[in-house]
Image (cartoon, rainbow, N blue to C red; front, side, top):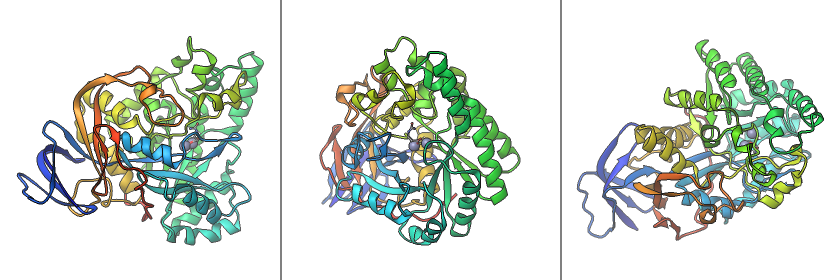
Length: 456
Ligand code: URP
Ligand code: ZN
Ligand code: ZN
């Protein structure tokens, strides 16, 4: 199986250059001007950008949460991912309380195997930290899981003691932790106060989870990481105050990686103004959507190179599932769809509107996630020998994002009605042509990716 991508503009994290690219089997076999390969199938890419397959380092497929299960499983979620130009996801396998870490990981393998349309790896969210969990860690690493998630809020939150113990236990193994940073006590009290004011609809959600809750938790996490002397990842950073805490720590030489998500760069708490409850519930995620000032601060940080990766936190629920929180914002399942929108919305805002070089997109949507999660250079770049994961992107297409044209199982997109420039047209996964003309033509080819330790 040989495919020659001819006449496109290849975009790496460093530059854009006109060149041909030859796929042979599952790998990139050659890159250069005027390549010739008579036996190859030829795809004309004149006028198109050729990106490495994008990597989404933060998804939740088939996750039980709030007495329901996310709308997208590995079949629908990874198909939507491919259609959006994402050829690899790193999903959060999650240990339920009462399970061992290995059982949690086994469950996620069962959920994904044979169903995934894009390649996938797993982080492991630790919900019960004890001696058994600690003893399991080396086996978890041997199974290709090198990154972990801890929550400082929610039912499966860890205490500060547990957080520090996990950081210390992972240190000799070369593991890294991504942490959901929100002060849970602060949120409990604020939820009661907001309800006491008679606010029960979705607009109460951001009021009950102030930016101080994120900033305090980031500060505490970074203090614990300094004591352990390990790098950490702050996942889904949403606030200017949290960012400022990270800046101060970095100025003191601390190694901290920052992830944010398109929703924190494009949507604010103003979405709740004039929205009915049903519409408002679609925008419930944690941390919550914040103010225009927070959004501007995150864009500035992105422009300055302070954001390491942009992931989706794809965690989708249908309107019917979200209706569990009718009249009580604390009962709304939290999360929104994003895997299909991430690349196009970031291309539109950052490259088409703001004039950023397309290579900057490659850095935060592909190369940095690949390094951070031990997949580089198999994934995240256009190099001879790398997996043949490609996205052919039409930068001149103009159109509107419509929920009825989306493929996630939630049935809507948070960017309904947005007019954008640029779209994903062709996608190759390990040399296989899987999306053609914006349509999925091959499903179920996704493979598990055992990962090495963080390469940053
Ligand atoms: O509300 C959200 N983001 N749900 C997904 C789980 C998480 O906190 O990452
Ligand atoms: Zn989280
Ligand atoms: Zn998440």
